[in-house]
Length: 318
Image (cartoon, rainbow, N blue to C red; front, side, top):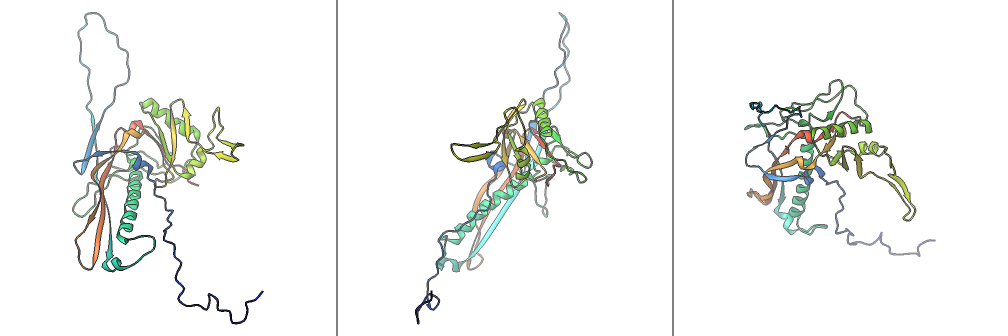
């Protein structure tokens, strides 16, 4: 078919208004399960400290009648600490923006501040998962918090060559294996679960990457029915939400901000954030025809007792 002669179509017309949706579509990941799921406690110093202790091992305990009582040697508590880290982001919007009619948002500043707050949470999550030693900081060096890998020493598996645990007080990072990464397996996972139980921990959450989750889906058991077809809903299901072991029951939480080579088995109430300054949106002084705002948070990671948790490190990621 062809147009009739002299048809004035849309290609000839001038002044057609733009058709721009009034919605901004953004699917960027913003979940922060580790940071969002932990308790928040008040910090009152840039070095937030806490103490840990443990019972001695059980021993034979029998005495004769009338025997004099002798005091046992006792050990002091262990004092630990982590430095608060300042997370700060800012945005500057020119005064001209007040007169503009924009799609998807009424005020550019409000939109950008909301984005910054979400991005900053991702930065905090990343820092908490980072294999990073604490840094005290000074006038020219920023303070840094020690991430989760820097605390775990008791219930861990890692590479047999260069791989090594840190001191466990946040002053140094783990030593990563560089020669041979190890395939994640059910046997290795169960070994760490048993170790946590033996130490007195009650693990409830596993945090791992999507790659390692795919391996976990292959774990077997005496009722391994995770992959099945629901005939009433025409659904194929292949998922593992809960893993029951003799040493505890854990849920699986995929994470994006931790290194895929690291798998954490956590007792959730043994981690928290020590918050010196909660997240705050502050207007900065004007320096011209613009508006400035900053979003700032200052906090640290608290590992209340590392022996309640465990980790599988130096896992193969491909």
